[in-house]
Length: 297
Image: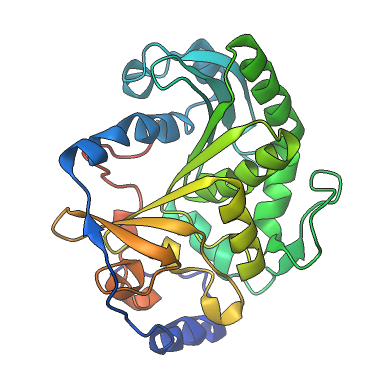
């Protein structure tokens, strides 16, 4: 068990008490085949490459992460790794999809962000999401982080779709990058109605309220991959109004990949069962490995 000092006592008590919230259910969870697990590996390397600086991803010269998707065609990269997370956009000719990837952060940094008493649920930016109702809200820090790079990412995606004559867009990210990927997927879907959007996030926290989760599910094919006892996917808590999107895949302690049905699954052997509260989790699981891949540049 690993515990971060940045969590306030009041919120810690709330997170521990939240262990009583889920009532575990018996639904049709299923174990993924080896072939299905292997199909996610290209996206894992793309999410890992997002930790590399923009010069490296624009040249597609970032070591193993780039070499494992050697045919990738970079289009644009940006961010400064501080106020603006690194991001890049390009085309995968094998998967025939535009790839959008966002840098994340390590667990010791993201836990204070999502448990700090200053965070709140806020409506989406009306310039980026002009037709979205005010009931749809995200964590204010995640929403603001997405806003800083959204116009540049959108322009690069449009360029890529035109250049490579595709309507497929896949958005990936780990940790904070996973949260940005979920918001970005919805933004790209509403901004480019012809796009077919898929999201593959790794150990993402809850991003917004239930209205946001329902809306985001309708805009993209959602996949959320969680690793063992990582605590990041259980914060912010459901007791403060947050909800996950659908599509959870939980890597169990035995390294099986379990498909967990529904939205914010409370099924046995899924993340909420494996990590009922923050004290029972382990931050060492945050970076993987995911089918042998440990996230990082």
